[in-house]
Length: 63
Image (cartoon, rainbow, N blue to C red):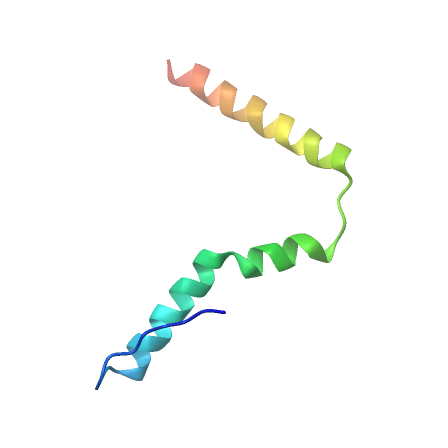
């Protein structure tokens, strides 16, 4: 549960912003989107490999 301390006389808009920021940091929305569709472990591993190759090529091009 997310708890946002609100000071006396604090604007509700500001408290809402704090709540939204905390909510984003928890990663709940990201987790929900990830769980919407099952992805096989082999597909996940392949995506990681492609990303690693891409990053490696970028770093080599930098030098």
